[in-house]
Length: 132
Image (tube, rainbow, N blue to C red; front, side):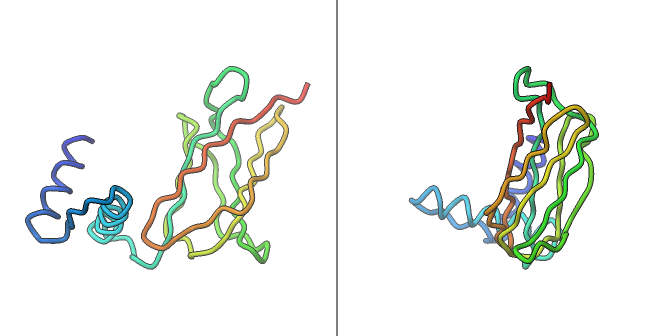
């Protein structure tokens, strides 16, 4: 993975797509947008990823259901977490959304007002609490 990131950054530097800036935020946003452009994903799409864990133990929750809804309450993505409790949705519209997370034996969690921006990866980690 480190080699891929190095090669990606090196290729952006060689092709002139990497803009060096004194502002870390501007530098990060430039790298993020260029990384998405070079990945083959549409630049006008947003990306959402994260991990679902147990709030008390920190254990990852494999198979947790994730539903992403836009501001009109329409489902724009859904899926389940992998063996590491990770989820990843690509090619989402730029919008303000809500994430709903469900797992048997745990209280569901709804996280709202998440802003998705085109060309960026938004990380939202979720810690679920067991219902006793």
